[in-house]
Image 1 (cartoon, rainbow, N blue to C red):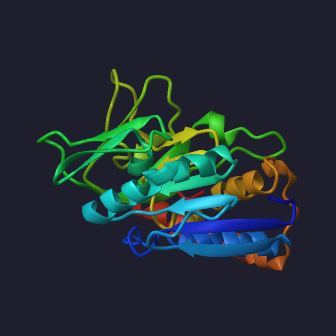
Image 2 (tube, one colour):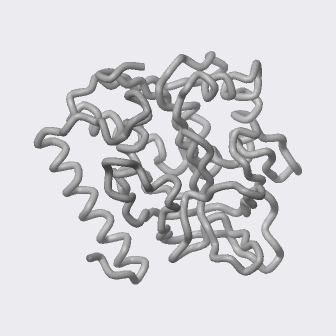
Amino acid sequence: MSASAVSVAVLYPELLGTYGDGGNAAVLAARGRARGLEVEVVEVVGSEPLPSCDVYLLGGGEDGPQRHVARLLAEGDRMARAVEAGGAVLAVCAGMQILGSAFRDVDGPVPGLSLLPCRTVEPLPTQRRAVGEVVVEPEAGLSDVPGLPPLPTLVGFENHGGRTALEPGATALGRVVRGVGNGVEVDGAAPVDGVVAGRVVGTYLHGPVLALNPALADRLLGWATGGDPSALPPGDERLVRLDEAAAAARAVRLRMAGLPTG
């Protein structure tokens, strides 16, 4: 890890690449390079050991591949070691479920890696699969960074059957304004999406989420370059164009969700 170089690992894209979440790596690379950073993106496939990287990305996938990835990442505590070494993680959908304490597939419960304080359970008989637009207001714990404006409203789409319950005291990524998110309500509280533990962020937001929410991408880049997101170098004209494209895409998503775009 250095202030001028960032390494990004996309974990098992051949297994967890159902919803285009691999695009999160392209976003980090583009935004980093627009800030003058050297960005290397590597793909981890098969039974390869995890490289030492600054950011690790996990995407969404189906039951069989999800179970297989959970087993691969548990071998030798490889994912836990990566986090202990300071790696930031963005885990989307199945990726988030894998990092929790447990999840379910068609064959029953599967142990997770316990790197996120959550557990994914079967939906109630009255709950249908969560499919559609999602709008999330971020929690202050992730949003409030000295020297940076608060994270704006997060947008994306969801497509999942499981319901993810947070453990007591856990911090959600944010409060759901539209959509289902984790899909588990506690004591009548507003529904939430995702979970955050240190530099590990889980969410059900696809899109890919970093393309639609560049401020979240910059949080990850800040962690990757020394832990201070407010110290990221300013970007060039490429960053301006990326921000403009993201703003246009966000406006479309907000209109699709029936919310104002301003």
